[in-house]
Amino acid sequence: MRLEFDTDPSGNQILSGHVFENTRFHDLDVKPGVGKKTRLEHCKFLNCSTSPGTCVIAGDVALNDVVISNLDCGDAIRISSETEFNEVVIAGDSPKSLIVQPRNESGFMMRPLAGETFQLDISNFHGEVVIVGMHTKAIRKDTSRHVGVLAKWKNDVDWNALRIDPFSYWRIYIKKLMLFSADEGVFSLPSKKDKNYGQTMREMELLENLGLQFE
Image 1: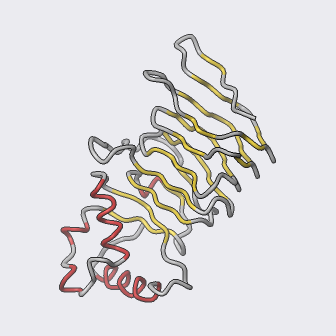
Image 2 (image 1 turned 120 degrees about the vertical axis):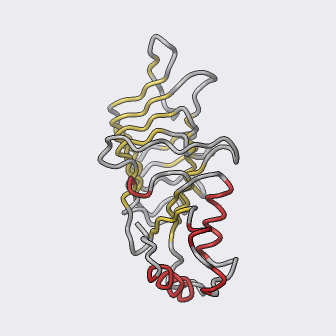
């Protein structure tokens, strides 16, 4: 199965008010044509899968009141940071990762915060999360597993004085933000089974003692 969109008079795609459950799609690649936009609203994708394709949502897409739960789509859901998010929920044990990042490493500007209750809710998603270029305050998280990171910490913190290695969890993700000229992002903390978990949490405590807030 493929998504079937309606088309408005300007040639933009719209999909509204659909619930898909246990549906197998060829893919969930949502990529508007050149100069066009796509809007998904009031839709749910519950326990669905893709075969042989993946789930990729490009820029120039608006997601409004969309739920994606337990989507079996390969290794990751991939969404462009240029996507417009409004009350989007991604939940469940599948896939292994959620990756939200800009399409290119230059020319990216974060969307301003609007009046949304929230932009994205990942509090019940159990895969690894990499979100670059979204406001941390607009993302609902599980604070035991997810953490907001700010690019400005690169210069705000004397990392050498704290003896925090350049390859530490914190500095790697700050570099990730700076690669895309993004001010903020949200990332998964390492698993308690990860060999770096203890060191990462000790470093987090040091940073909190300096006044950093991990929202």
